[in-house]
Structure formats: structure tokens, C-alpha cells
Length: 118
Image (tube, rainbow, N blue to C red; front, top):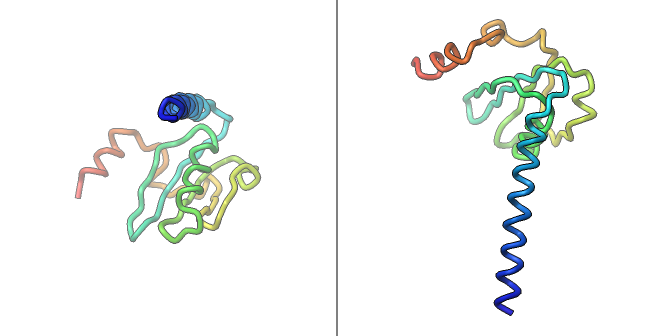
């Protein structure tokens, strides 16, 4: 019996590693649209760099679900995002043109400077 459990644990670990690798590959596949994400949680806002597809957005929606622990705002030029992402109540989608001016064309060094400057 113990041998069976150890074998099953090894298979599970192998399967989890395979899923992790596949998720990383999917995240890297660009769908041709731009996504800028802002998470509003407990009185603070966290801005994320642009993502290449809706996989990360779906993961955020899965994490924040009904919006009780935070809200996910996505600025995008993808007109079909509401069809591609299953929203539980935490997601708000805005056209890319509505992205706040101070968040447009922000370099990584400027973003880091904002992060460390009080």
C-alpha cells in the first residue's frame, strides 16, 4: 500500500510540473492585444506591466472571485475580452485609451522609481 501511495505522489508531482511548464508557455504566447492591469485591494493600487494574453487576467479573476479581497481593472484594446475571461464580479474592463496618462509608455526604470520613492 505504501508503495502505491509513493508512486501516486510521484505521478502527481510530475503532472504538476508539466502543468506549470505548460502555463508558462501559454503565458508567453501573444494574442496581438495589449493588457495593462491595476489591482485595487485594501486601499492600495498595484499596477502590473503589460501582458500578452488573457491567461493571467483569468488567473487574477479566479483569485479575486467576487471582488471581496480586491478588484481587477484591465485596460486593453481587445474587444472580445469579456468573452474570453470568465468574470465572477471582480473585473472591470476599460478601453486602452482610458489608461491614466501617467501610466502610458512608462519605462521599467520609471516604474521602479515610483515604487521606491515615497
